[in-house]
Amino acid sequence: MSTENEGTAVPPAPSAPPPAPVDAPAASAYQGHPAPGAAPDPGRAAPPAPAQGADQGHGPTPQGPAGGTGWGPHGAHGGQDPTPSSSAPEASWPPPPPPSTPSYGDGGAGYGQGGWGAPPQPPAPKKNGGGRGRMLAAVLVAALVAGGAGGGLGYTLAKENDSNGSTTVSASASGGNVKRDPGTIAAVAAKALPSTVTIEAEGSSGEGGTGTGFVFDTQGHIVTNNHVVADAVDDGKVSATFPDGKKYDAEVVGHAQGYDVAVIKLKNAPSDLKPLTLGNSDDVAVGDSTIAIGAPFGLSNTVTTGIISAKNRPVASSDGAGSQASYMSALQTDASINPGNSGGPLLDAQGNVIGINSAIQSTSNGGFGTGQAGSIGLGFAIPINQAKYVAQELIRTGKPVYAKIGASVSLEDTAGGAKITEQGAGGSEPVDPGGPADKAGLRPGDVITKLDDRVIDSGPTLIGEIWTHKPGDEVTITYERDGKERTTELTLGSRTGDS
Image 1: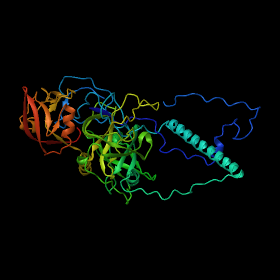
Image 2: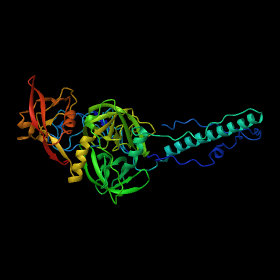
Image 3: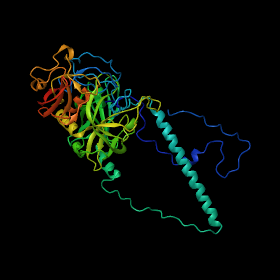
């Protein structure tokens, strides 16, 4: 299954609507309209009727090496679907995205046509982005004006009734203290928000976008998605802004394209950083409550809720900017995730991080006049157990380490398993001589149908499942050869770097 990344550029919306003027009720009165209770002015023309307006406005089936099975790096952003091919996968790393790649759910969620788990893409740099903000501001002002008028009218009527001798019982001016117990959404959000940041990344050419990240340790390391900061890796600029408005310059410490995980470090980090508590994604159950924090469409510090809709969801995601994909065995949630949410934490009901919001399944049209996809209740997060391991490796060495089986598999979405190709990428051997698959007795043409107890229905599913493991892990491979089912034990090898 594939999805889209949230990294597509979109006109950013203001992080918060502008405050309404104190005299909003009076200012809201349309010139030419008499104030409530005033006699109409016969000499004044009626105001023109308001204009009616409609302001509201991944991939192919290329073949490639199996999950770290000796492939090249995966792309985190893939836009156009590559042309399906029956040829062997290319030798370069990463493998191209499979047909129907989902989009990223970070600051750029929702690319691709009908893909599965594209990362939410970050909205584009803040250019010409005031349209939606002005519309929202107008709506809020109008609401305040209506409230003010209603309040004034109510007060007038009360005065009149009172003068006629009727009595009025007024409610208490205070509703009492509001207590938010630990475990409530409000309590979880209040604790997690101060440790969640909005990330702005900009490449040397000026391109970039907005995403989200969260505090990983007291040294100033922030975990996010690779596709959020990819544009800023080479001579770019990265900054992180906390909910209190404090903004820090940062640098990319390391990034893993295939995993779609990256780590940045704050420059001159404050001494009072509070890392979010990491949970255990293996213990998550379908139906568990979830809380997502991010900056959808540039609206920083947004909190949404939902549940875990599914586990171990195979997702190949792309951000629409290239021809490579990232692979994961994802947590699926119906918590609203949109472009700008990418890299943000997915929390459980106790406030523990159980995943990194990374991709969404989307329709082809996102609305808001941008053509960018938005949430339809199908969001995908990288399980925190995997992301934690990747982040620690990036902090330690600056490079990702991938588990691999040492064989090239077809990326065609056959649903019958992951077939080891007859020819390797770029003419190389389909099974690495002396590699894990070779030692386990696997051959070209074998179709892998299970890894341990996980059903494997395609090459991308195999890759995502392999990458939930660490190099050196022993796994049981179930495969078919000549119509017969067989099993073999295999010790996963390793590959360092994305290329």
